[in-house]
Image 1 (cartoon, rainbow, N blue to C red):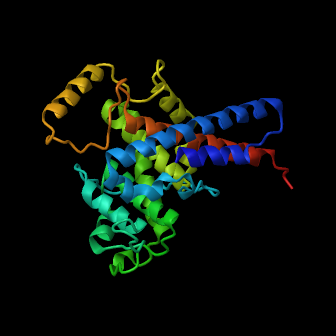
Image 2 (tube, rainbow, N blue to C red):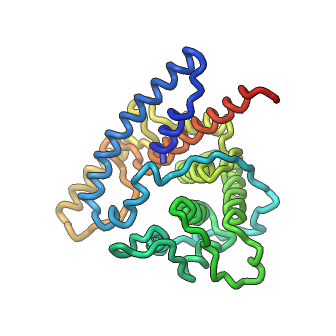
Length: 297
């Protein structure tokens, strides 16, 4: 996602003055660094988790991700009357539903398949937090993959007039409320990851009101000053080394964790989500800057 955001930023950069041109040069250097890091990351994923790599390989191309050209805002009249206290999200089902969209559920599989369990789960109302962001991600990935009708076969009368955009607006409106609640109550270790993930995914879906200037300050304050990553816990470093030793001694005790704490205590997930969100901010601010420079006629 960040690759797509940065490459688009470099392409559309309004380089009308020396300061702006110098900033663009920094962005170009970042793209080059990111491309090199990305190659290493993809090679490592292919080696360490070949099944997961095969299933999600389409997402590993920056050209898969389309940066928004048009913007809209959330609507707080679409808030759920009540939200479940527990997640209605199952990682295995979610992964399966995404592979059916991508066509990676088998070799040369047909893409854009929507099963009833997938449609029911991904259109369920009242889900919180990670369930909500993964429901939105499902629709986002479907659109990027070119799947034209994710809702075909939904016979519920109450959903007769619902479009894919309707669901995106409902999900992001509720994610907006989640973020506002998190800030009101004070961001914690548990909520900050969801807070940033919501900015990333709703921003990429085209909801510009997630790119609030004060939210950007919250994200930047979370960056580790020493190594530059996000979600760094220095206490974790010695614990991780201990966990790895334990796993070596008990090879069958393999914990399936998509989150990986890196040797310097950084959270791979939060770092990835945060830099993706920052890339979104950059692109949005560039388009805004462009709009203000256009003549009124």
